[in-house]
Image (cartoon, rainbow, N blue to C red; front, side, top):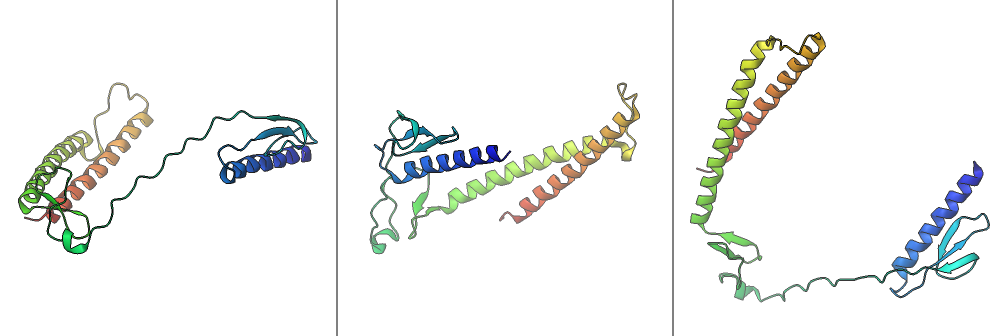
Length: 182
């Protein structure tokens, strides 16, 4: 057992050595695989040890970070439209470099959002009504494949959970609709 621990310890040291070599050494550094006295593979930057052989590793590919645009004077940015803006209708950059949307564009987005939320609310209310009709206040009809009473109880519990989840969804959608600006 202690032999296994010792081997694992040597292995971990070898892995750490390889990782430190990869992090600290230049991309052209050599890595050697050697064996320790106990026969555990050790990865290192020099051929010190038994049965050392040089590993043929693929060169590292590095990609430089993209250059950030040069900062412009604050007076030039305040009211001017951003050159080469993303092309969004009505969008312009404000003083901090964040896009600003025209009032008409924002109204259109708010209207679309309200319509989508109302459609989702209708769907969720219809689904909830359907679940409650099947649930029948905790006494749903037994199905033909529910000869086992536990199967029936499991389905009743799933219906109850689905109803609770549906009620939560309806409440969340109503809160979100109420929070929208008129």
